[in-house]
Amino acid sequence: MKNLIQDTLNKIKQEHIAPEPRWKFLSRKIGIWIGIIAVVALGALVISVVYFLLAQLDWDVYPLMHQNIFTYGLSVMPYFWLAFLAVLALLAFLAVRKTENGYRFNWLLIVFSIAIGILAIGFFISRVGWGGRFNGMMMHQMPYYAQNVATKEKQWMQPEAGFLAGTIHTVSGSTLEIDDLNNSTWNVQLTKQTLIRPSVTLAQGQMIKIIGTRKDAQNFVASEIRPWVGQGMMGSGQGRGMMNNFIRN
Image 1 (tube, rainbow, N blue to C red):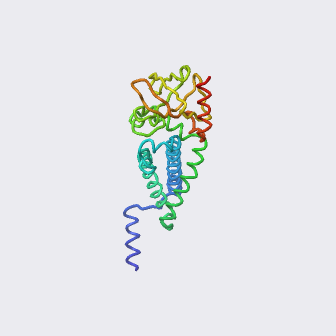
Image 2 (image 1 turned 90 degrees about the horizontal axis):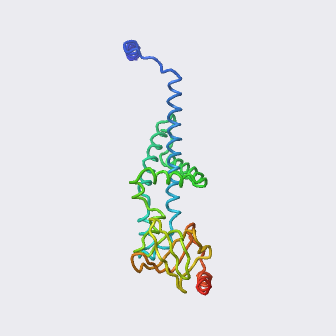
């Protein structure tokens, strides 16, 4: 025992080992927690972007795409953000493990706590609209991102599949002339069977979503018209009544 103590003392003298200053210890401790908070906050921002991307889509149109809800969900899932979120969660987990008492906690408790923190902060960020703003910034600054993420604009700019969106330019009888999201002009024909959602206003400058059939290069027959914002209200009888009145007038 005496030899062990003496050997340890000799090693301390030879290698000039000295106690670490308290400020270094505190700095490292604070730095780890700042890192954990930053990673969780970034994860929450990612959650808010994922929610924004999924919430903006019209989830009731998947039957018209000849898909079920499961396959449609897989086709629009923002995998880029989900993978990034997984990396952030792993970093947060490893950082917590490196804290002074991190080794004492069960790993399931750590994972659960991180998930709750990310979801809670993500909910708040979503409510104040930061997810949509951040997504918009990404869309403008990263062309690759814009090309590979499912958006409301992409969902409703598939005329060959029966989906069209744009701004009404003129209204003439039962025909609408619209400028679509790609700045192309379309003639949209309305019929007595066309369902117009109650919240839709068929007037110049109004932005609308259209379900129907593409007849040729610039002509489209509408079976349903929705407002651009939201999915409209259910109640086909009221909508068709509005269409009949519109045509008669």
